[in-house]
Amino acid sequence: MAIQLTPAARDRMQDFLKKDPAALGVRFGIKRTGCSGFGYTVDLAEAIVENDRVFDQDGLRLVVDAKALPFVDGTEIDFQRAGLNATFVFRNPNATGACGCGESFTVAADI
Image (cartoon, rainbow, N blue to C red):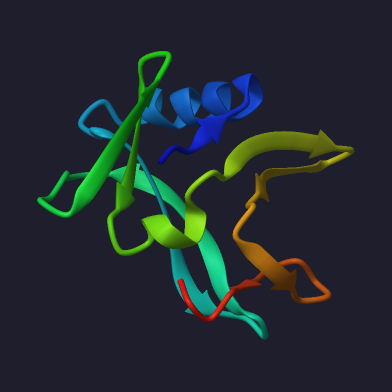
């Protein structure tokens, strides 16, 4: 099981971590939202708890709750700029659909 970061995503996350030296890493997860079911979350990890899975990629600690892992396992996280916009882009092999606006996704019912 793994989450992959592109160099651009890793660099952006490291920029966030530099602004908060107390953070233990970056927390990646999901929440129920939108018209398709789940949305991605990316926040600073203030703590690492028992059910967390920690991935290290080139010195960056990525923290994922074990309950979210089946929904995001294998995801590649990228960071892209287009004009004045900048955003994380998620390539999730578990997603079976997405809403029209791209804010949420669905997964197979048996995960």
